Image 1 (cartoon, rainbow, N blue to C red):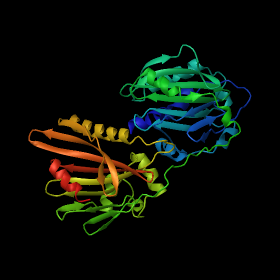
Image 2 (image 1 turned 90 degrees about the vertical axis):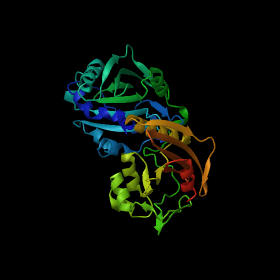
Image 3 (image 1 turned 180 degrees about the horizontal axis):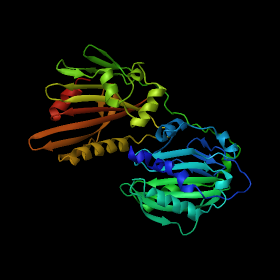
Image 4 (image 1 turned 45 degrees about the vertical axis):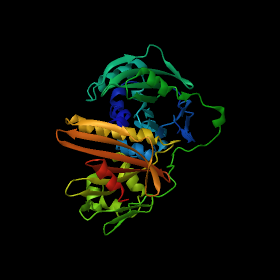
Length: 401
């Protein structure tokens, strides 16, 4: 989750960093930007941002879950004494974790008399060094950067494991407009590529309303599935699993406890809005079934995630590779030898074709494999993970579907 939340590490410190900075001038109250398909347009910021192919947009609710603060009414900016920060847009690369945040901060007039860009950015660099995120290598931009209609003063620095972050600032009276962009691989060229998705507002969007609250693109329904004795059935993907007698299935309570979510959210038959919001906080995937062999600890697990908001085409191969790499790194970090393999063809399981990749784990005489299968059905991404001692055992387990 660290990659997804990188931008928001800064949120708690902006108010402290800006205290004592400001200049008063005629009011131009902030207004919300809006999504026009895959393009965010903000007249107040004087720009638009077009989502790249593998990027997703975040709803107000999702941003509130990350920050731990509820969405606020934009009428708050009419209060001249209000000191508030509001996030208007956030988007991220679903695979790499690169992200962009657009926010507005308001200050009371007495705090906005001596505002200047240098003081703002210097204050923030000082605060960042005390945040425990490894902030370092601060560099002020020599000249402002043109993005859309306005020029933006900026600062770059590294955080965490060499992620490169840039803060761009434009000050208008008692309001501070901020763009935060993060390249997780620390590449300046990658950061430039992210910012190149910003541009001046296209005339085609002039006078168009758009929507400030992008909704889910998921048209279907995802079910938890049901057990009838040793037979598990999930109608959402037309899948049946005939569990052997020597296997044990997790109860709904055990699944809920593993994910640390309230049991009441999992007793509805289908996955509702509240649970999807909770799932966003824990990483996006909801476990709907898990069973394991009590003698060998071979296991089967089924999970589902909602198609991210605004995504043109879900990067199924990238999603699979990310999970396989994460699992491989986990085993390698505790001293196991690992190999990774990706299937060149799909595997038919139940009524659907699944892409797959596996991690082979070995340590001295111990060897086992974990194979992940992924598919998309009615706008939901399903993952089936099978753990077995060898290829023959893996084949037997798949034959139970």
